[in-house]
Length: 455
Ligand SMILES: [Ca+2]
Image (cartoon, rainbow, N blue to C red):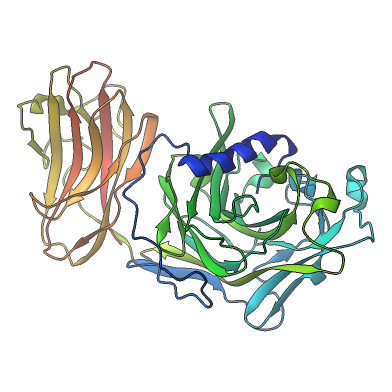
């Protein structure tokens, strides 16, 4: 969901972008396993994967919404963001009686009304044409990072705009989009096979938007599916049914995504994502009811028992002590500890840079005696220029295939990390691998403050 009226064009653009593979500058990682053949699933089994610890959940048991977790909106005025119709021109008037819990599910019900409901703070927006529901966890459940997932059944039909999303906890102070917004699921009837995902934030003096999504080739509406974001300090991965990864990941170092966010669940009708259609055109007849149903929402933390493994000279303040270099063409001189433009912390950092052609260097530290488990390597990076390959990576033996994250262009120090790697032999090599067929003085990678984290 987007929270201002004048972002309609970017909203539509985000939807289009999702179809063509996302607008990120990064190359998406290798797609994960293909989807299950099943077309519709009931109570979905869900496994967050190794290393994830449940931090919070609502299974929607009992017969009423848990007020310790959720706030229920009672009109089209949102006191958190101080606006009407949520900035998106939605046609509904949320109210508490359209939000129910029963049968192990949260049910948000939309219905057409001729009552003309209006909030005195929103008279300029006119009476609303539908009742529906909107809940959020502001001030009650606000968390950062991890895996946020929910099993949701969305209704189908023109004008249905169900959403599972988050906003930054500081939105009342800084406004949108500085607060940051993570749209895990939005659904549009024109593209019923898509789980639409997006991210919004403020940077470089303007609102920034990133759209992606996942598609299983059949409508995801009218059946339960699991919608998920895996959110780290540097990346967001969106998944459908725990198997289908979105067309592109979002890489970032935004303050908006280094803070707690709160969860929103709502069923909107019409609004700017649909081009502001007349209420009469919405696929919801008088007397008909459509529902968005949620079996559970879960927020997992990455390794509740995660711990940092000591490294030798991780901040490069002791020259290259503890670090080794592999270079197939003798360009290892490009790999050193320097002070140019300062470190992320301290005075020194590692730089990989060369005018020579070709250029390739793998700067790494070996670690032995590790307990078996899952690990992740994290570091701060600044990078410019065009390398053929530039990665933060880890591998369990010299000739083993690495896990890695391709580094983007970062003008400011940016926190990056590898995917998790399973260690069973106690040994890990970790560091930075950079290669350029043609050297270029504009090429540089600066790295500092490397961490090895056991998940
Ligand atoms: Ca340093």
